Length: 78
Image 1: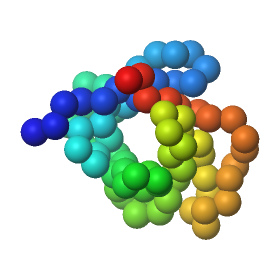
Image 2 (image 1 turned 135 degrees about the horizontal axis):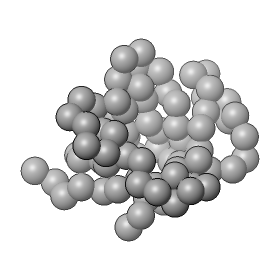
Image 3 (image 1 turned 30 degrees about the vertical axis):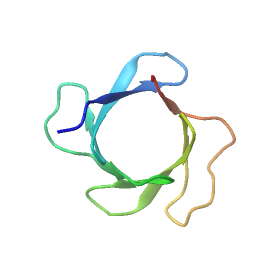
């Protein structure tokens, strides 16, 4: 099993998600809510793209891949 990577809220700097392997979980949760590849994050329930990963920053996107804004919403804490 891989080590956990914590994902923090960009504005509050509080931990919001935990990534183990390709899946993300809410802190304290045991059901995956997203799965991540190297560039995008997808919702587990709909399989739609919802995040774009650029280095340690995570930006929201629409299901068609268009950005919803220019500011990150999350970031990796490592």
